[in-house]
Length: 347
Image 1 (cartoon, one colour):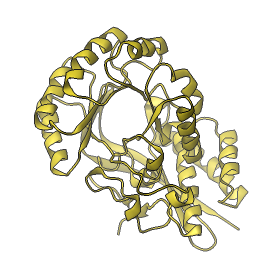
Image 2 (image 1 turned 180 degrees about the vertical axis):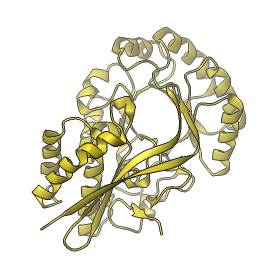
Image 3 (image 1 turned 180 degrees about the horizontal axis):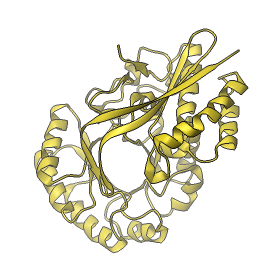
Image 4 (image 1 turned 45 degrees about the vertical axis):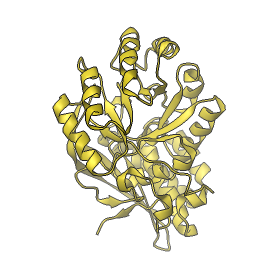
């Protein structure tokens, strides 16, 4: 069997400026991988690199030729474990770049078997979730307007970005227009440990599900301090990058938040999920701002998760790829009528 590979870069405008405590973005720079077999079937994968983790579109483009050479050398896309092991040996870091290839190979394998990816994994399409929709950090009035738009589109789970001196006002404003939605907040490492405990005590009155990454990832004892005193469950995101991090956060949080772009691929994501379960943690899968070239694959993990935060493609002004149906945020694996991940270039 012979495999042909290629990749291309895209700059995708966001529907609204997207702010977190570290800054605001107006577009997402992604890289899309295509792997074609000798029967003309094509697997698609995507990289949504984050400079916070040391990756950019330039670094992804720089290492992809070596990663795709591994795929071509192995030759058989069904040798998934061998491909991902050799990719790690070839490029130890650059998880978003490795993820793009991992997703494309999985997509191709499931297409060759003529089944959706969840079925290849043996998962129940009815055991799925509603993704949260993120309200990016802005002034309270703009965040209120974004919340109203989300509600009009049928979203029943919202994630709110915090990390300012207006955090309580922001959540109060959003609750005033969305009193019944499931709601959680994400500080993106912005608070000190003592500040986090104080703010969480005040935020608890707004009926929040949990608080994501309240303190810096470089402060594991600070995370423990917050976890032991918090009146709300704590999710670890920036503190949980790879499988090796799970034992280190297990006594410092309630929820492990994995992202394909952090851990480097779908097989590694499943390992992280099972490792988190073994340590008594709940599991969420998050994302960067990405297209369905990668988000679609993450949706197939939904039956293994407690929470899904897979709105990366929903935040785009326009996604060149269609993916798993997500009307109102409901991840509808059973409604997917295509083999593979479901990612397909829009007409």
